[in-house]
Length: 558
Image (cartoon, rainbow, N blue to C red; front, side, top):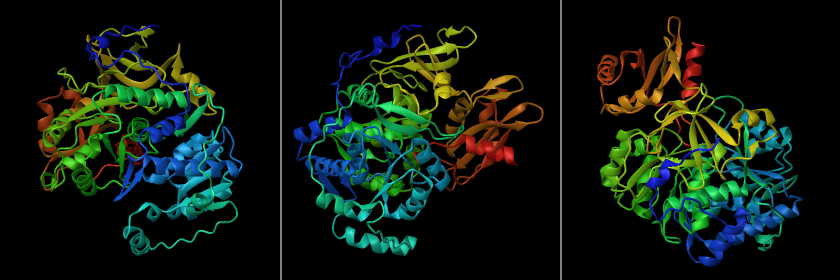
């Protein structure tokens, strides 16, 4: 099946339909940037600045040390770190040594981490002293042979580096001692003893895996998405081409999105490394700290997710902070309500556009245009360069018609190699070279795409197909609603019925009757929620994506 590409008519002349890149490993792009911008700030971390030259040298030192421990091409090294300089150093050091990065979410339970470590057969684990007790236990339950321990204070400026351990002990009652023995290694000692020489590992960027990115597991057992060097390089190059007005070596990115999530990894870390941008790293989400960081550090780029923008817009002191440095924001991971987009653009004066992606595509496949007068409300935009996309009709066993609902399918150089050790699941999502995303949507006559919902999130009530996103868009337009998610819950008569989980804005008095009347003005009767539940907060992933499945599971247990 070959698709037409009507969206190319909307490409500005500055964005090529197809882009190219050098056939070399991802870590060698770091080398290029360090040579081109050695004295530029690579990382700003809680008041400490690190140049590209220094960051690159430390990456080489860690890569050499990994090699000394017997780490070989194709070996897996797990990284369990928040956004900090060590996360960048460790990621590229593993790649420089020819290894495969396994990103771990530090917030996961021991059983979740144990599963991913055993599934990947990782031999090395790089983490914080904060997680040392958990890491030690995991070492006895998995194939981990070596644990490298670092500390947040090692990259803090004076006097924060002296105060941090005291604060840690007071707030978390933690005083952890790490002994360098029995496969445990100390980060600071590595940097004292290891040489900063470049390694020569024979890597085929098209075939060799750079990353195992485990899917969130909200719909079942997590699967290890195999992303090659070329997958990651091509998607980062597409990102740079899309934001063609950004100046190499001159922009700065707010790194709120965690790097252990593929979205933050590509649009913040890899983009910065390849383009010589400054990363302003935020290790933990806190809306006040983010507003302070924007005012002080003046980032020009701010990739995020809707819940982050919602939190900032609802901050009581929002208007006290200068956010005018923010020029470009791309929102992903979850649908962006139009109401939130318009409010955020008004507050910052910058552009906020919605994009679309998934772990299996490194992750971005679509986005709206930053520099265009064409605005399509609710659209995820158009496919990126080198990317094919279409809507598949199961009934027709082929492409759907314009404006006809179906499953979004994509293909391009950013699409994964497959799932790690899982041929059955790999074959289930690929057909004729197309990746079936599991998302339901449609394409309009101009080639702009719209996501209606996850295939598995679609609600079937009384024989009607109901898509949560449409209802959420309506409820977000109510000025008293801060956050909302809609899900299908069991119903003895309709099979499923529509339920809305709502977080009211601070101080707002909101009733079920009020929301019901509001919804009925904008929705067909069968789409109007039959149940409402008001909450102080909604369950979210580490990247801020609302966990609809968790709410449904709670309902089924009642």
